[in-house]
Length: 115
Image 1 (cartoon, rainbow, N blue to C red):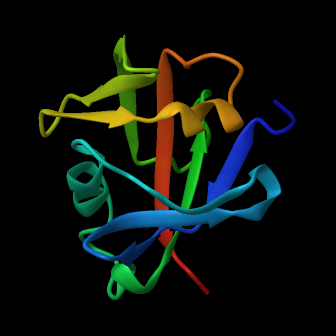
Image 2: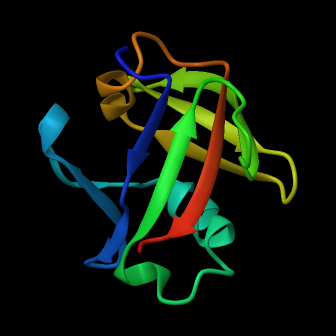
């Protein structure tokens, strides 16, 4: 992993949240299986979030993070993470390994409007 803190810019496409990251070879990579609902919760106070927002994430706490999701289990090459409040679970596909050598025990997330 080259960075401790990463940033992507998810947006709404074809009924779900997706993101592009040409640096790791991803285009319109979809979030599925509970993660769209987690993102909806995270961005509920960001006007126009579906047009795109900035998602900062890390395996380590950083100033300003909004939520922490915790590793639950591996399944089908991806990993399930849970949010305590409100209680939610979501599956992150193997694209997670474009950013981490192994599934982190926790992920810290912050959503901000794009400038």
